[in-house]
Image (cartoon, rainbow, N blue to C red; front, side, top):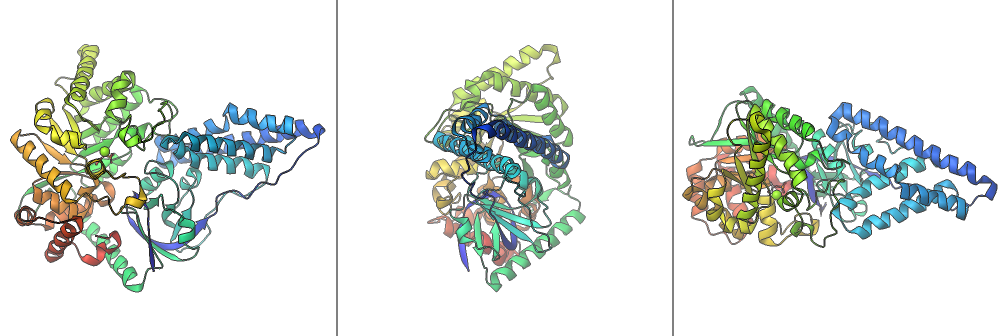
Length: 585
Ligand code: PEP
Ligand code: MG
């Protein structure tokens, strides 16, 4: 038994047999042609390109039918690459001037393009690498008559392990057969990860040397939340996993039977609001079915990632309206584009940055690009006429950013004139930078609500890159320095009577939720994969006991906090240690 760490990208746990995908095409032989063969070779290349384009169109349609237009849009990135004039001209030059066979000429061009992407150093461009491998394989497979990568027939659950999972394969995955995937490359916002999330398949990315560490045919347990992978787990570990699955399923059944609409109250009758985090418009309906009390975080940037054009106001309006209409009696908190960091759309010329998480990100991008921002704000304001929509701005570090956003919202109302909905759309901020925590007293009069983003706050308080798998163990949202920040937030919000929720991943972790309840938070927004279980956790705890536990504690580190709170949950019977071992909790 051994363990490997990566970045948890799509939550959930899975046990399966490792199936390694050697998706990299076999080396392309160096072949030259005679001058009189040049035009035939050019035609062969153009035919292969046309075939690739046709296949991508078909995949786009299939994906659209299966997952909806947002996922189908991801193939646009690949079509763009197939039609890239630089790659076409370069390939033709190699054929005409260097007398290279079409496959060799194209392969060299792709190699050069890859170097250009890597040299750019931008996350967006690096995310494009999986598209590049996909396109390379697709064109070469016609030229060299190679098969498409396939998942073998059979019933045994598989964990796919690859350097990179091509989006075209991800879009064809059968969740009954492939129960998880692990890749060496990729990021939380990669196309394959987005698909995995919609299929409910756990995924771990950024695993250094995954292909070496996880041999073909071995059994593996993966945790898509913590990024932990156990290779060849021993019997107790497997047993614990199985018991966890049985228990989770039993809980789910109980909850479904017990009407999802039932409010969430702790054992001492303290009301807790559990809302959903949604990354894509089509998750809204599922959030409703699971009994979420609204959407506490709608990550709108996933509407634009992988798309070659800025989504129109009409397109955005439809998506936002659909969300509020799904929750006629509940709030939907729409977060404005959180671009930058590890989320880049194709239509924005992002500067090359050494530290994208400390760079041109989120509200900074939106305020610098008022057309992009106004488009979104207009769509949001119009959609607010159909329900309880609120606007949330990410990555705020100053009052000025809030005031400038308010001014733009004011402009939207002025421009809409009589068509504007009555009443102003509430505006809130993500508290996810140390500056926002520090300035909360000053910020409070300018906002209607705030939402605690524990993912970024952890990154910025502990100075640890949230996307760096090597630092996964240091990324601890229950570090004492963070607990101090959470306490300050609760205090400031009480003083100013400012509604506060938590939408970071900590609320999706049983121990994290218990600590947050103990600190005094009452509103949480949680990703769909753990929402149901977390409602159960909230119902099983006694808020007053947790307050005492958290108030009286002076934990030296996150591990001490986790151990004590996990023991409390175990005592209450809401959380058994073995179920959590895989998560390292
Ligand atoms: C956070 O930072 O905690 C958060 C909820 O936002 P995101 O994970 O999208 O940055
Ligand atoms: Mg954030």
